Image (tube, rainbow, N blue to C red; front, side):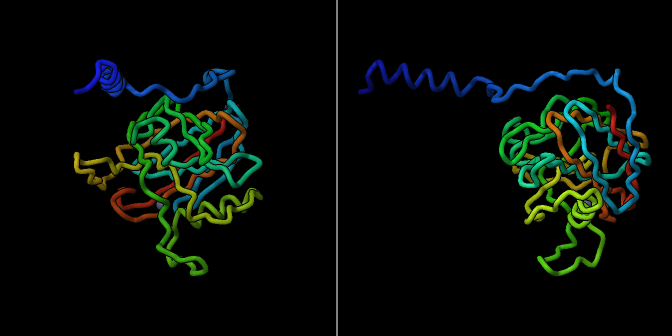
Length: 235
Ligand SMILES: [Zn+2]
């Protein structure tokens, strides 16, 4: 027969299990509201390519899909270390949520919040897919344009050292519409919900190097037509 003490302990555990998860992080508020910042740089991202830029703490990045239905793979590295970068598995588990939404930080592979989404006119993004890669193996050039190669090219173009293992640097996939379809965990594979001119605004929580690639895939996830994106930096 169970003691009264062990019954009470079991009841306490059960009550704890029913509580919503406690946040395991705090996010420093912005030093400047977005409305008081000015456009500092406008960087077009041609279709099937990527571009990189440095974002200082509290600067904002606006990623716009001018023609809609276009994925932007988002990568971000700590400014002085290509060993620390935003990692979707950490974003999912720290937020205890499978989707990237306004108010949810993006965490690094060391558990540090590096970015936070502040505005979003779409509401559907993906954290599960790796960068498209043309299925190349190390040392084997891909036959088609792809986000993994384009991320590396964008880093080289701004003289940021490419990580030793770029295949483990996974993107946060802006505007990608591949939600969980059912309780069995199957994934849908759909056109982005983004309409022409839709955008997200992201604030830097640390000094970071950001890369956005306009996803090269000619499949339905880019509306069967890979298109350009536009990146704006506000300071
Ligand atoms: Zn891609």
